[in-house]
Length: 210
Image (cartoon, rainbow, N blue to C red):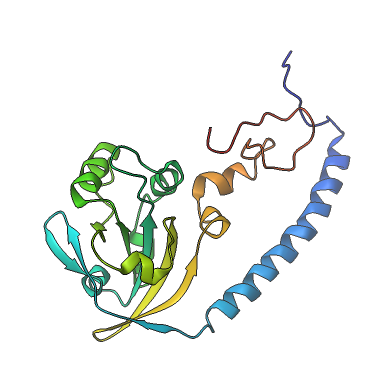
């Protein structure tokens, strides 16, 4: 017998009724997210300057990170110092598995950090992230100009010829909701099992960052 609390066991009809009630709320949340996405697509944009980063193969510009695409999703990985790596950024980057779907929507992906390029390259190799383009913004004003403030941020950029514009940014829970692992975990009975969640008494929970 498990000592961990579990959901109550009910007849199938009672479960179906509870599920149907939840579905109403889920559909309303979906419609709300659709409205937010429509509003997001109507945001204005701000022009960004020219930046040159350090990449494993040499200098690379912000414009070059677009590759052949017109849009760029750029994740700024927190610089935690010479001997440490942000666990939250690491967890997020582990979820960046396949970029072909983004490419199909004309979106490139890149990760930039104020970490030295040697530190980034070593970590990328250690983690098996060779499929994720990366560059170091150390020594530039890029992080400050983006308003990262020593943290992490996801920015969306659009190019028009050689001109680059930022159209959207999100951080904190806005980045969190993009994760495959957490979104699927949210569907499970115990959720993410983190101590900030509103769960029934007895549900297994641990500190979010250990």
